Image 1: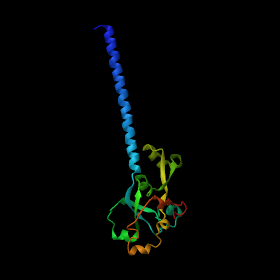
Image 2 (image 1 turned 135 degrees about the vertical axis):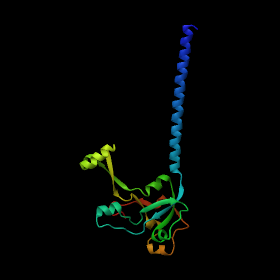
Image 3 (image 1 turned 90 degrees about the vertical axis):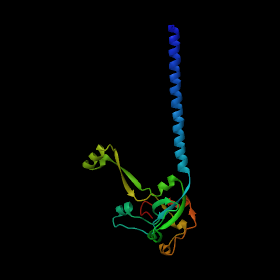
Image 4 (image 1 turned 30 degrees about the horizontal axis):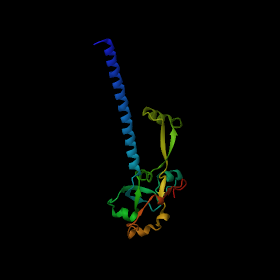
Length: 187
């Protein structure tokens, strides 16, 4: 085999490898994009969930702790799959609503309000602990819920009605009955 043939063979082989790598990278990007699109589509998919809603105000004498830890009227305690088995206590103590929600909306209903705290603003011992854990900041809950169910919009006003039965058993609500919780009192 002549040196010219060897060079031609090396060039063809190298070109084939480069093209193969390019095709692999291109296909990998397409598959990755498809995965991201599937996740986005799943988050847009609407499902029926059952939502457990507080109908009474919890109060703490410390205003900061009250905002951080006390359930208020309309705050969502939890979101469960349709057909969840509720205890008798839950049925008479909380409002249970069926809601059409996306996965993102479901997560938002129990989302708290957080504030980031720079490590430099923390006591030395806590700062050192977080630095060892490779954390650059700390998040602190400053409000128990970012969103709540607008009980007035739903048509619910008297918690004593729950002693008889759940008032909205045959009805399914949408995101329109959700509002941002007020930062002051949570109501």
